[in-house]
Length: 619
Image 1: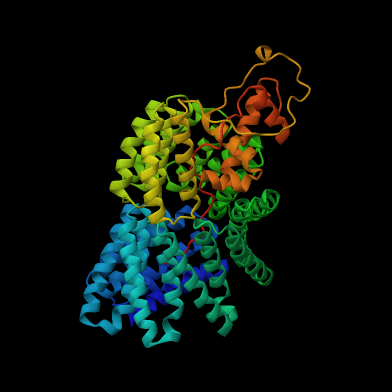
Image 2 (image 1 turned 180 degrees about the horizontal axis):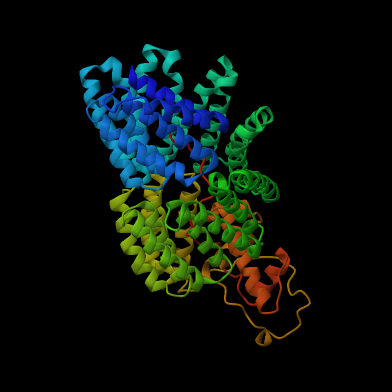
């Protein structure tokens, strides 16, 4: 009974939108504690209530003192509650949420694991009484395992939570259906993290279907959760390449958030800002960059308003929205504006979370990618090297984010002309991807594709072809024959095979541009910019297909990434006094320099950009 009260109290605190109400709860709870002896049966839970109220207030106003007090109070409550397993499991679960909030992921995992262990014992003794709480603790554990990069273990915990809640829903549908939807959302996230994108989409779709049903029955109670699940669904649709369907889901989520914001602006504006940032990402995926900029700019404006009132609470959200807006500017070729926004995002994230928080590291990774796009490869490498050292210190060598930064660093060195170094680094990296994520994880396949690419660039096209053929078989099996990555590998294999059979000279393709742009200078008098291999690949794919979206999909990269490579090529021509602002101008410059005689050639996306994640985490 006490455990049910604790969960109910925690949820009430976290859902309280009135700062005055939270202040009153903190004051009243402190007064209640002053009247209780530590040996009182309710003392530990009441102390936990105080920690929960302080944590809720921290989320509202961002006072670090509230967060520090919450951690200390939960630890004190835990010491007192050790004699009562039920109370201890509740306090441990909530402590893990607070520790996760401050980036102490390993400590959060320890607390969440102990909470599950206790609740397993309680469930063994009285299954009916404690099974719902075991599902809650498993959901929490899955999140904490995911945060430390243990994706397979996280999936196991999330799957067990869903199985339990399905069983409970059969017994009492009305009571447990909302919790099942929540667990399905988390399961979708965990399935996505291990690369099972289609299965993740199935789980996310079921969560939306349930929440639509619940919203019909009680619109006011469940409409916010429906918006959250729609955002989650949009992410999963995007991961399987269904960009238009993802846009539809994200648009519906924004429409709901707007409705809720009209009814209660203070309570709903943060969620609207987050939904707008996600909508911007989905618009960019479909090539609607101007509309994406409008959406991302609205998200930034909303977060600026929130940060003006409660900066500490919302500066991290502002940083994420700034990164999303910067990505859109990057896609439109406005690299200087993008760099300014990313620098502001990095500064904001450092202010909010510190230099070493994982979210700060993500923004620093984004900043390095902009330097890559602008052609400042040396600066990008410098950032990646320091970033890798910080990631290793914070998350350890086997965290998937660490592997991704290593991939970026290796590819950056390849772009600098060190193809053999890239091959050597990627050989080791592929082995680590296979060990940590498994041979069939999409990130493993992508890293193998990068390795094949740099083998070809290092002068070994036959080795590239051999590896690409093996990747193609695995991609067909894991991702499907029509997945963009599978199609790109098929095309890359054909290209490198053609290159090898032509003795190192690729076959020409016909193009019909406006040829020389009034440039009457002799070829030997023109300064040629030094375009990287990936810049050339992006330009040729665009010219061959006539469509940036088609070109991006043919290369297995996002339209945003294709845009950045094309813009880098334009910048290089501008720097040597030969501007190429239009497509026809760029084609003519390339023809003048005998650079567009190649067919579409392979590439893979090496810049990892995090533009915000709408996925749900359950405390």
